[in-house]
Length: 185
Image 1: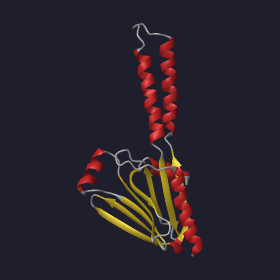
Image 2: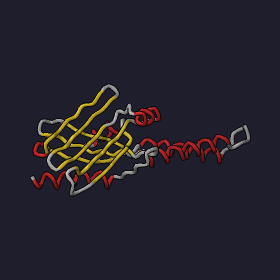
Image 3: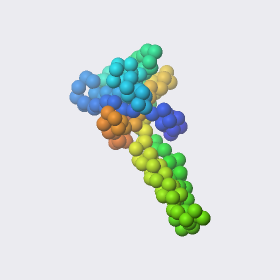
Image 4: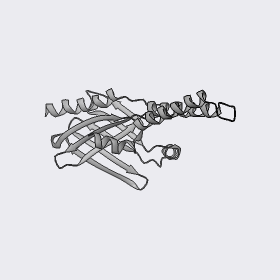
């Protein structure tokens, strides 16, 4: 699971829709697109390459899209062997932030020959940018594995443009819903 989350976190999609409606036939709906301004513009004009992960009472539907087309995979709940959820944070950002802070403090303590503290302020701003990156770039993963070893997974992160927020509690709730549906069968 951890290896899968680390691999997919680099290619995390930007969340467009996240709906959980227990009691209805269509229980969970997750829709995400590729990140970036160009992808957002394409989604506005209808040339979107979105991925969808839908959970129904009797099946899981996984739609993988690109600009050249879509592939829809339907997995009956009776064929699910593993359901997993998790999250991944960019740990390297914290490491780079600490390094930048150390350089910044060093620059403030030992002023260079140029007689200014500009390098100290520069590295302080860089450290703040890395901290913000760590906070905002948490990737979440929801994945199911069928009995035939097919992995249907969607790795996504919150959307700033679309305003859709998500946390790990919501991702783990999706797996709990799958677990409830599997125990009913």
